[in-house]
Length: 140
Ligand SMILES: [Zn+2]
Image (cartoon, rainbow, N blue to C red; front, side, top):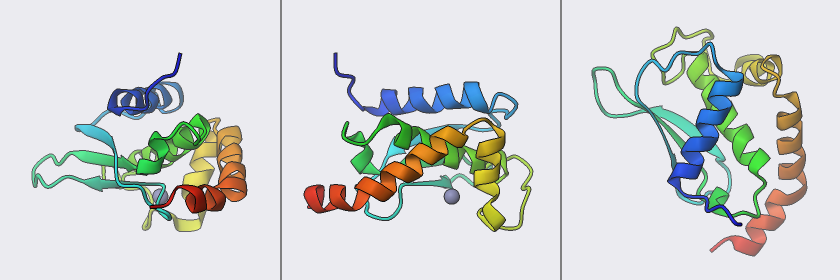
């Protein structure tokens, strides 16, 4: 059986990673996850929604990741990266832990501390070996 990578699938991936690797991080506001447009450079992003009071958090995942050619581990690693920003207080109500979101590898350090070193490694490996070719074959 093939599982369709629709919105519910993406939401389930995020919830699974959250429960397994970020159980101490409270859901402090509404957090939405969605597929964005296919994009060559940005694999994922996190931002605040427009509301000025209690703004929502919106995590956007590269639209190319709807394609089953992209390993699930790559999608999971990007979700975990964005969730780390949330945990560290970027685009989230949590206390901001660093001056800048990518300061001195703080995201990767946290991912490793949370038991995601293998996931991170397999993402980097796949992206390095396949992403350019994938884009050549699929870019419109
Ligand atoms: Zn980031």
